[in-house]
Image (cartoon, rainbow, N blue to C red; front, side, top):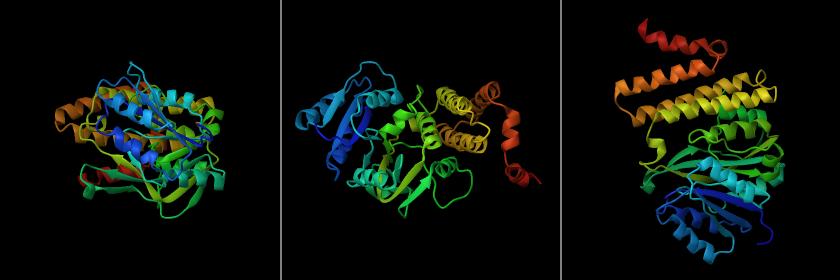
Length: 320
């Protein structure tokens, strides 16, 4: 295939019900110079057979099979090794994108000489009427990487924020290769590490309105269950980011963004915990486990120096 502009990398694992919808949304993009790299991570259902029908019909669709279950992050890394496009997009098999998404994101990177382009996100359920806006960008814009990182971390109140999800973004491949940015080998939080590191290094970020990444919520997905591994991987993800900042001698400069992002991701993890587990004693066991892990890895003194004491005052207000 000649003149590949964009490589879309799709990790798959037992997604026979959804992969067709995902592939159709890419094959019908207004941008045509696309290669699709489906990286199988050990599926045992009919996922690969369905993908093969597309590979036989379309010369820009490829299946890479692996009998070992290495995880989403490592599957994406495998795709990055094989990608031939000037730009990179990641899409999970149960999600999809609007028909103009990749054309507008690639055009925006070219227009602004950006490293990353970002569009809005809609949360989708089985019922079309239940679709909800998650991130909505009203105007075309171009941000500095530092400001985008602060929006990711929710450092302060703003009219827009940036999600750590990778499905609503297109990346310049040369940018990812220059800094050797890859996904860590964890099951939960790999997007958090990838998002923080990419925005840390990015010079310019494009914001693109009017097209959306559709994030499908499956009730039986990993995001609706909870285990000790969620906590272990959260701790590992935050540890990796801190080590990365230290390796580049940036921890002192970006401590505010780091701890704001830590709090944001911690709140997201707690949300998953309280939605998935209703038993109070079980919730407390998880929290005990978290704080034991936290004190072994992180500096409580650093965190107290960072934290806004007004938040503690507000938490104590009902007891006055």
